[in-house]
Amino acid sequence: MTTGTESTATVRGQEVSTEHYIGGSRVASEATFEDRAPYSRELLADVARGGKAEAEAAAQAAEKAFPEWAALGAAGRSPYLHRLADLIDENVERIAEVECDDMAMLIRSLKARVIGRGARNYRSYADLAVAYEERDWSSNGTWNRVQRMPAGPAAVITPWNAPFMLSTWKTAPALAAGCTVVLKPPEWAPLSCSMLAELADEAGLPAGVFNVLQGIGEEAGAALVARPEMRRISFTGSPETGRLIATTAAGNLVPFTAELGGKNPLIVFADADLEAAAQKAAGQYDDAGQVCLAGTRLLVEESVLDEFTKLFKSKAAEHVLGDPRDDATTVSPLIHPDHLSRVEGFVDRARDAGDKIVIGGRPSDAGELFYEPTLVEPASNDSEIVQREVFGPVLTLQTFADEAEAIELANSTEYGLSGIVYTASAERAERVGRAVRAGTVWVNTFLVRDLTAPFGGIGISGIGREGGDYALDFYSDLKTLQILDGTTE
Ligand code: NAD
Image 1 (tube, rainbow, N blue to C red):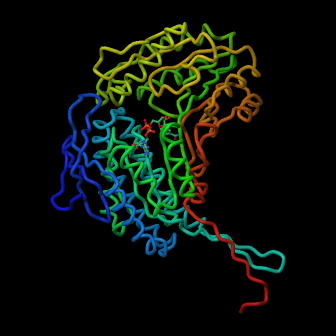
Image 2: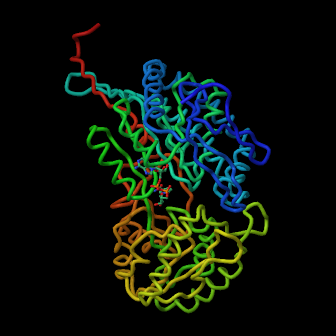
């Protein structure tokens, strides 16, 4: 671990630090790991590979900065977070350019909505924390107050799909609530989180309030969550990693929140706008299906199966696989060769087990990490391809006879992140919306979200809720103060 001349990578003309950001300084590690672009497969950067020593330094920096940051109060912290939001807005193009090379999301999605959502996260928590800091009332001859006390340093661990936005989704409420933060970015797409550190520095956040620890999950991530300084652990990633971190959190008795995988139903009733439903279903191939909320299990009412399938196939056939920077491209590559092998393995096992491949089913010749948009008709609801998250451009298609069967199928996996329902009936929307077991259910729409709404999963899709004041609760210790009326002046 050394400080001194900073190592940077130049990506699309943007200088990005490849080092940790600890206690307000850039810090190198002797070891590094390679970060390659999914589309071009070029080496983008050799990134600092943190371990126990760096995790300790970052945790101690966050602990040292905590008392002063907490003492500022929500109103005192708010201007820093507004400044950071403004800086994100000013740098959307730069961050999008780097993240497009780093994780291959379509550049137009990054520029139009994904990176800017980071600014919205910061702006909304800068205001929300002030509005929700305390509540007081009188009852039974006493004056009562509930105070949100900042919990302490928080470890934040994020995945590689939309790494910048997902990191702001956690770090914004943590910082607004008065926690200091150590962020561990994903090793398959680590660069845009380094840019968040650069902007936090520019926004004037005091040294140690926001730290970035780069490295491999099993090394830097595991070392960070085990640090005794961490008073909260917030994780987004796979259920497998979630289980490991939960064990560490339990050992240290540290509150832990987890946003995990999804195997979400997209239910199409016969009365729905089939054109819109098919468009939405087939549109989910765009980021190579690497979206936790995607409705990957298509459940279609039997009477409209043929019509829906025809519409779906024609829309899926319009996709263009290619460079995520090209306007014509609609489907990007997968993130990493290991992930391509994982996706291939799922579909190959499905084929071997007797599931029917309706479209796709093999790697594409569009480039090294492309997989064809794939639709599978499973032999049974117990098929692995129905029951496990693939996190690739792979959807399954099943039918149902009536509403009761639709709900039964929708709720038949261990996951419960989201549900999507297409119907023209308000009564059915209400009934099915209530019955689907998931953290979020959308009807006739998808992925629109109010930032004050709770967000999270049921079952192996997650523990706890983020969003709005739910996240502020997580990053705070709530204290009740009661004073007997008439005993103080
Ligand atoms: P992952 O679990 O492999 O890794 C996520 C993060 O955890 C990475 O930063 C990684 O370095 C770190 N990590 C890995 N092992 C660790 C350990 N032992 N200790 C501490 N940290 C460790 O997940 P991924 O492949 O990066 O992301 C894909 C998964 O994330 C999918 O399951 C997807 O559904 C899920 N996801 C969920 C949401 C949500 O909001 N529910 C959002 C995006 C992605």
